[in-house]
Every structure is written in C-alpha cells, then in structure tokens.
Image (cartoon, rainbow, N blue to C red; front, side):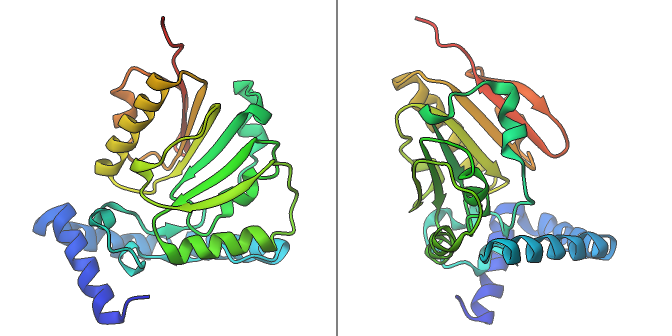
Length: 243
C-alpha cells in the first residue's frame, strides 16, 4: 500500500482533478457532516462486516479510500473507495426477471474483496466473475473465494484484474452488478462497451446498479429499460433486439 504522504497526495490530486478547487472544499465539508451524522450507521456497518466475515471465514469488511489502493493506471482518479456491500438475497432480487441462471454469467464490476461474488456463488450461475483493477483487492477476493464456508452452486467463480470499461464479456446471458464502483467517466465507457457487446451478440441483460449515483446515464440510453428503482438499487433490463 502507498505511504501516508503518498496517499494524501493522491487523494488531493484525485479530488482536484475530478471536483476542482471549490468542489473539493465542498466535499471536505460534506464528509465532515456525514461523519457527524452517520456515526451510528458506520457502527452498524462494522457489525454487519464482522458478522459476515466471522460466519463464513473470510475478510470482506472495512472501507479503503480509493487513493490508498495500489492502482497507477490513468483511470485511477475515476474510481471509488472500497466499501463492502451489505448482504443481499440475490435469489429475491433476481426472482422477478425469470433468468435461466445455468446459461447466465454474473459479472461484478469493481468486485473489491469479493463479498458480492461469494453471495452470488450461492446461485447456479454458469460463472461468477469479479473484475477489479487493484491487484491487492483482487488477491484478497481470490483468497476469500478459497476460504468461503457458505453455500456454493455456481459452476465457476473467478477474479480478473483489469479496467471495467475494457472487460470482454463472456458468451450467454448476463447479470452485471455494480455498487457505485467509479465515477461518470468510467460509467459512460461501461455503458458504451455493454451496448457494443449486445450489438455484436444479442442476449439477455440485467444490470443491477446499487447506490445508483449515476443512474441518469443509464436513463439516457435506449438499449436498456428501467425495471426497478429505489434508493437502494436500480435494475435495468436489455431491450429486445430488433432484426
């Protein structure tokens, strides 16, 4: 991991490049206010992390600022902090969409330590894949896949290191999961890459976008349609391909 001085410099650089001077000052104020208001929420999240990790013998909890990660690619400034996703009953989330799971791949863009991969692997997907640009987080995710004591039904699970916007999607139907992994720059590239993938090989698509900060970008395209919207997550399904 970077030194303290390096982390501070990276955080400042990222903030100035993505928010500007005034935006950076406003962000600092918002963070301070959020910490004052959200102490109870933070404590609850820590309890959830500890319970999940203890139950399944893994290490998925905690928060790691984006600037602290071992990423030196040009896109590092567009990433988000690592925050573990709260436990999700994917069976219930996916039930309304009538997917043929053994013919479907589950792709987590920005998988971090892999908690979502572990939860998704309980269902009989053809494959569950995490895409992560931090080698350190990818290594932790792979270790967690090996150590996990929970239920497994997926035919295969894997973690690949790379940029989410450059990922080459496997054949077959897709569930693409994201928990606010990056800003609008990379999100737009991900949208364009998915649209191209569906154009080249039409198939069913379901996008599960948790903490949908950039949901407006998905609303602006016509190859998906909104199926579910809440403060927790949005779900978009691919429109039927013509021709």
